Image 1 (cartoon, each protein chain N blue to C red):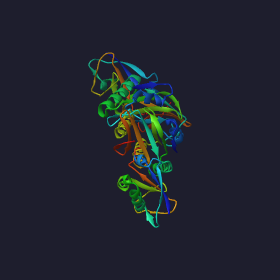
Image 2 (cartoon, rainbow over the protein chains, first blue to last red):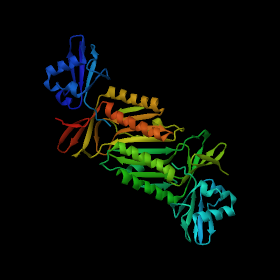
Image 3 (cartoon, rainbow over the protein chains, first blue to last red):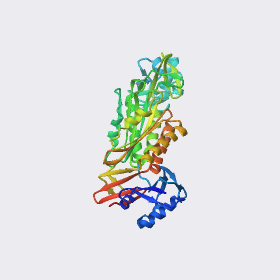
Image 4 (cartoon, chains in turn blue, red, cyan, brown):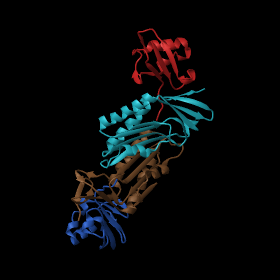
Length: 81
Length: 81
Length: 140
Length: 140
């Protein structure tokens, strides 16, 4: 399956385009995607410990299963307002 | 001494001009002024039980002494805002 | 900054009075004349005011917000006749700390309603009423 | 009503969205870009946003204020670069019950800051910083 990972905050300095297309073997979870990203880019190793995640623009967890075409966003602590 | 009593809220329907010049024997307190007003106009008999008072635009009490020229305001429960 | 006027109120005037470039936020309470009051239809309100004391009391509120919370506060109150939908009162508190700004603004409007000598006269299709605290007294 | 835009915000737009003639008041929180942040001088902020989720989260806040307090709420948030002194966020809650309007408005801005995916990038004379919660991370 292919998913699209989105990055915000200082992770934009690591992934300047803000997104990363990722191919994973099914079945895969958010945690599997994070592991694959960390293997490709060591500066993303802290993703799951430093961000909340959203799948399809809804809050999700490390165990949330992914399906082909999903949008997976890694959300650092927010600072709007 | 002569003082000026001021009326607000529904007391304006009893004293349409909103004020009443009152001559009292010294020494006199707010309570003495209220008693004199009630004697002249029975519909003012409930003044002290229904209003807070101010002397010189400052909150006062029934025991506050009055002096010549004072402005004594009878303030029903407020409803600004 | 306090203002007691018969002219329409501009909420922005209160904002401009309290905000500096070092303030990150403001909390504002705006009271508007509404079309009903405890089951009565209302077409407009007339606010009666004991002006020198009302101004002094509003100034005390501003000083108290500065003393207790260290925050700048502005209060505007209109009096005379005010039609439905128009603004009667504005309280604005500037702050970089939003918890305190909410608390101070709420305290200021609560205290204004209790301690600033202003009274509403409600104009309704079935008569006119003096509002004294929670009580409505038929007016002549 | 929610609005996420790069254009300057008009607080009155939030007021107009929530007020009816039967509402007696509104409480408004307005967040402004200030010239300092935890000891750093700030010349401006850039807000980065995950737009579809931010809009959905703001809409959830509006629904939640309606459900919990029965009050109309509008939220405006600007993103992109915002200079010092300009408005970044507006939360407005209409109410005839001021205690609840203060509570609901405060809950909405607190929850927005925690759960709406928007991030500040601070421009300072000595560099640029990503703000992530309480942390400032030097930006490239």
